[in-house]
Length: 77
Image 1 (cartoon, helix red, strand yellow):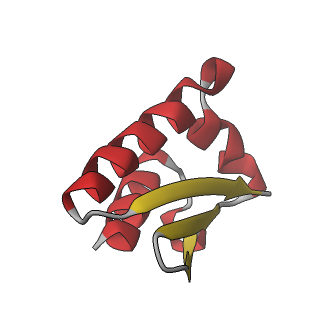
Image 2 (cartoon, one colour; image 1 turned 60 degrees about the vertical axis):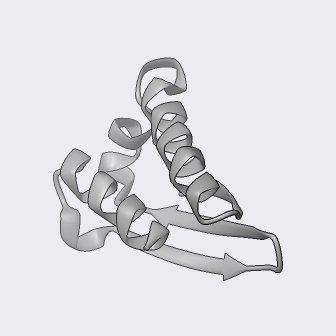
Image 3 (tube, helix red, strand yellow; image 1 turned 180 degrees about the vertical axis):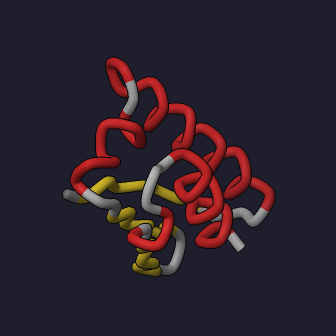
């Protein structure tokens, strides 16, 4: 469910939504989501001074609390 949330948000922000790839690396209590986008769209995901990335992480954190898990987002080049 959280993977689809990250993918949905990222696809809405970028120019090339077909190049959005979200990988889930699961642990017992913590789940790490790796987000890959086109190099041209990397700035749109990060935003000015990282504001967009911080907002995505905040939404992911709030959604993960309902599932009683800890979720982290890594944005990869």
